[in-house]
Length: 69
Image (cartoon, rainbow, N blue to C red; front, side, top):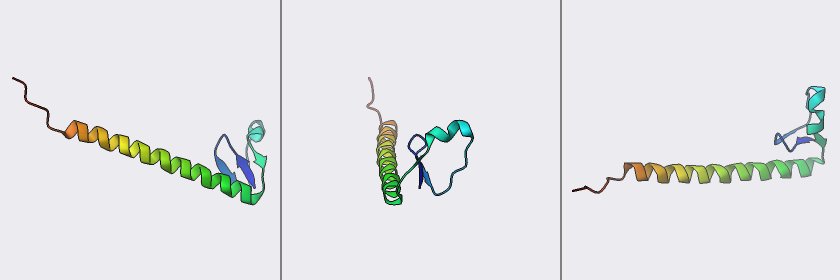
């Protein structure tokens, strides 16, 4: 398979301009698919963290503020 670690992409056939050829490498299919699964897991974890931070920020914004005298 063809893998680009920089672009985090995996494919069987890749066409790209010559100046980007250095971004791609040939890799065993099992290794490439494992790397793709790792990237997806990392993306999902980052998404979960961002969602949690967003939810907490929304809760702080929506929480009633203490009255000031």
